[in-house]
Image 1 (cartoon, rainbow, N blue to C red):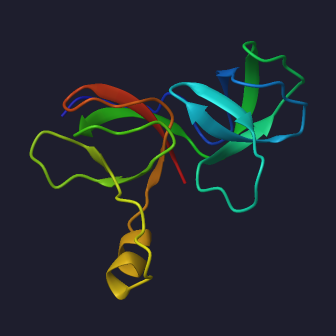
Image 2: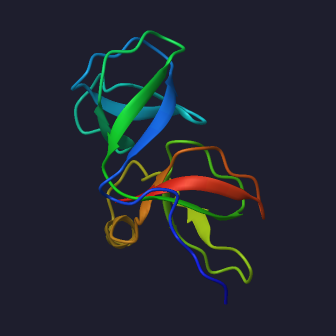
Length: 134
Protein backbone atom coordinates (compact mmCIF):
# COMPACT_ATOMS: atom_id res chain seq x y z
CA UNK A 1 0.00 0.00 0.00
CA UNK A 2 1.31 3.46 -0.90
CA UNK A 3 1.61 6.50 1.32
CA UNK A 4 -1.44 8.69 1.89
CA UNK A 5 -1.97 12.17 3.28
CA UNK A 6 -5.33 13.97 3.49
CA UNK A 7 -5.97 16.95 1.21
CA UNK A 8 -6.03 19.05 4.40
CA UNK A 9 -5.63 18.23 8.04
CA UNK A 10 -7.77 19.44 10.95
CA UNK A 11 -5.63 22.55 11.52
CA UNK A 12 -5.94 23.77 7.92
CA UNK A 13 -8.31 25.72 5.77
CA UNK A 14 -9.91 24.77 2.47
CA UNK A 15 -11.18 27.01 -0.33
CA UNK A 16 -14.67 26.71 -1.82
CA UNK A 17 -16.82 28.73 -4.19
CA UNK A 18 -19.84 30.37 -2.59
CA UNK A 19 -23.41 29.94 -3.84
CA UNK A 20 -24.50 33.02 -1.90
CA UNK A 21 -22.83 35.93 -0.10
CA UNK A 22 -21.16 35.00 3.18
CA UNK A 23 -19.73 37.01 6.06
CA UNK A 24 -16.51 36.20 7.90
CA UNK A 25 -17.37 34.10 10.94
CA UNK A 26 -20.53 32.62 9.37
CA UNK A 27 -21.19 28.89 9.74
CA UNK A 28 -21.13 27.26 6.30
CA UNK A 29 -22.79 24.20 4.77
CA UNK A 30 -22.28 22.29 1.52
CA UNK A 31 -24.68 23.78 -1.04
CA UNK A 32 -23.51 21.91 -4.16
CA UNK A 33 -20.50 20.10 -5.57
CA UNK A 34 -17.55 22.11 -4.27
CA UNK A 35 -19.70 25.03 -3.12
CA UNK A 36 -20.78 26.37 0.27
CA UNK A 37 -23.40 28.77 1.62
CA UNK A 38 -24.28 30.33 4.96
CA UNK A 39 -26.19 27.92 7.18
CA UNK A 40 -29.80 29.06 7.11
CA UNK A 41 -31.54 26.70 9.50
CA UNK A 42 -30.73 24.84 12.70
CA UNK A 43 -29.13 21.39 12.95
CA UNK A 44 -27.92 20.96 9.37
CA UNK A 45 -26.04 17.71 8.82
CA UNK A 46 -23.79 19.15 6.08
CA UNK A 47 -21.98 21.79 8.20
CA UNK A 48 -18.32 22.08 7.12
CA UNK A 49 -16.78 25.03 8.94
CA UNK A 50 -16.54 28.79 9.44
CA UNK A 51 -15.91 31.48 6.79
CA UNK A 52 -12.52 33.11 7.29
CA UNK A 53 -13.62 36.33 5.52
CA UNK A 54 -16.49 38.00 3.66
CA UNK A 55 -17.15 36.70 0.13
CA UNK A 56 -19.70 37.62 -2.54
CA UNK A 57 -21.85 35.01 -4.24
CA UNK A 58 -19.74 33.07 -6.76
CA UNK A 59 -16.46 34.14 -5.14
CA UNK A 60 -13.88 31.97 -3.44
CA UNK A 61 -14.00 31.77 0.34
CA UNK A 62 -11.47 30.29 2.73
CA UNK A 63 -13.09 28.04 5.33
CA UNK A 64 -11.74 27.00 8.71
CA UNK A 65 -12.63 23.34 8.34
CA UNK A 66 -14.45 21.17 10.86
CA UNK A 67 -12.27 18.19 9.99
CA UNK A 68 -9.67 16.97 7.51
CA UNK A 69 -10.53 16.70 3.81
CA UNK A 70 -9.92 13.36 2.10
CA UNK A 71 -10.03 12.11 -1.48
CA UNK A 72 -11.39 8.55 -1.83
CA UNK A 73 -13.10 6.20 -4.30
CA UNK A 74 -16.90 6.46 -4.31
CA UNK A 75 -19.10 3.38 -3.92
CA UNK A 76 -22.06 4.35 -6.11
CA UNK A 77 -23.38 7.86 -6.66
CA UNK A 78 -22.77 10.27 -3.78
CA UNK A 79 -24.38 13.72 -3.73
CA UNK A 80 -22.47 16.70 -2.39
CA UNK A 81 -23.62 17.33 1.19
CA UNK A 82 -24.57 13.70 1.81
CA UNK A 83 -23.50 11.88 4.96
CA UNK A 84 -20.97 9.17 4.08
CA UNK A 85 -19.87 5.92 5.65
CA UNK A 86 -17.43 3.11 4.95
CA UNK A 87 -18.02 0.96 1.88
CA UNK A 88 -18.58 -2.78 1.92
CA UNK A 89 -17.70 -3.08 -1.78
CA UNK A 90 -14.29 -4.37 -2.83
CA UNK A 91 -12.04 -1.66 -4.30
CA UNK A 92 -14.29 1.20 -3.11
CA UNK A 93 -13.79 3.37 -0.03
CA UNK A 94 -16.79 5.53 0.85
CA UNK A 95 -20.57 5.20 0.31
CA UNK A 96 -23.53 7.53 0.91
CA UNK A 97 -25.82 6.82 3.87
CA UNK A 98 -29.51 6.63 3.02
CA UNK A 99 -31.68 9.41 4.40
CA UNK A 100 -33.55 8.61 7.61
CA UNK A 101 -37.11 7.38 7.13
CA UNK A 102 -40.29 8.95 8.49
CA UNK A 103 -40.37 6.66 11.51
CA UNK A 104 -37.24 6.68 13.65
CA UNK A 105 -36.31 3.04 14.20
CA UNK A 106 -33.38 1.23 15.79
CA UNK A 107 -31.78 0.44 12.42
CA UNK A 108 -31.64 4.16 11.61
CA UNK A 109 -30.19 4.94 15.02
CA UNK A 110 -27.46 2.38 14.37
CA UNK A 111 -26.83 3.77 10.88
CA UNK A 112 -26.41 7.30 12.26
CA UNK A 113 -23.48 6.08 14.33
CA UNK A 114 -21.79 4.92 11.11
CA UNK A 115 -21.41 8.48 9.72
CA UNK A 116 -17.74 9.18 9.02
CA UNK A 117 -18.10 12.42 7.10
CA UNK A 118 -19.81 14.77 4.66
CA UNK A 119 -19.38 14.71 0.85
CA UNK A 120 -17.84 17.99 -0.36
CA UNK A 121 -18.11 17.15 -4.05
CA UNK A 122 -20.39 14.86 -6.02
CA UNK A 123 -19.03 11.33 -6.31
CA UNK A 124 -19.54 8.94 -9.22
CA UNK A 125 -19.07 5.18 -8.74
CA UNK A 126 -15.40 4.14 -8.76
CA UNK A 127 -14.06 7.69 -9.16
CA UNK A 128 -12.31 9.91 -6.63
CA UNK A 129 -14.29 12.58 -4.82
CA UNK A 130 -13.65 14.78 -1.78
CA UNK A 131 -15.23 14.41 1.62
CA UNK A 132 -14.59 15.77 5.12
CA UNK A 133 -14.19 13.69 8.26
CA UNK A 134 -16.45 14.55 11.17
